[in-house]
Length: 381
Image (cartoon, rainbow, N blue to C red):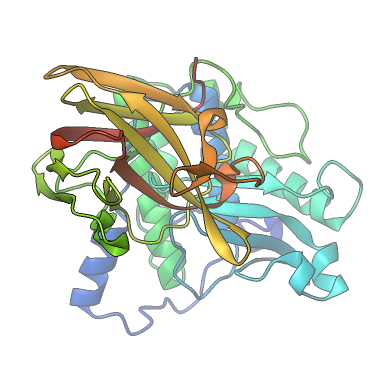
């Protein structure tokens, strides 16, 4: 599918711009965009998951949009006037005409695949559902060939708009890597086609409550990992005397210092503001080496109480000098402010705005924790 010849505008699939469109992007800007759309945390996946993510991602990228999508930021897919349109505006903020064409809430994942939370219109008899059905037919027809999946991926389609082209290429790199990691590279498209569902007006879905869904990597602190903008917050903000800081080496973040309970008694590091939709997942996995002290993992959300953002936290123990895996279900996170429980709603993983690591175990003395990897899991025991 070198130029997506199987996909036609009449079938409401990937739309070409007839004259091509560099859209004024210079080489330096393009190289920066290329680097920033590098798929992060690609892992081997079950075939049905690859197929479902490829379908939903191609559906999103068939839409018209002129903004640069960001990982974890919700966008909204509409079927309007016979075309797919991707927007930053939610259906409740728009006209009734737009709401009638709402297909679903879309989120770009770190591995450059897209997920869609379908609207209630899908599965019913209406123009939106019919449009998805036509796209499904075109997608299935594209898989009706003996070539391998890699050969039909849109690695470079010069006639697409710039951002569509950029993210289509990123998707292709992601799918190719997942297929290779899963040792599925020799599977023909017809074999993939057999995994498609029979219903044509619904989104093929892969359910993350199954145990074979792989973890999603948030960061592993390598040069290819996303920069989460870590910074330090110690108890000096409330008159305390604790000291703490971090340094990042290849493959590790080292959080170290000294706590002093004559004051606040805590030290912490936090990420910059994030926008992550982790609603498909059930908890956090940390791979770390500690010092035997108790630490706290923090999740900031968009929820607020008395006009203040609510932070949810969960404590975990470490073993002195030992590398361990720590799994923390989202259900274990509780809303706290300065150690006190808050009367607030349960954590909503669909709206994570930040993460952090903290030590606040009511002890004096030095601490040091080496953090090697942060993931989220679809199943946590």
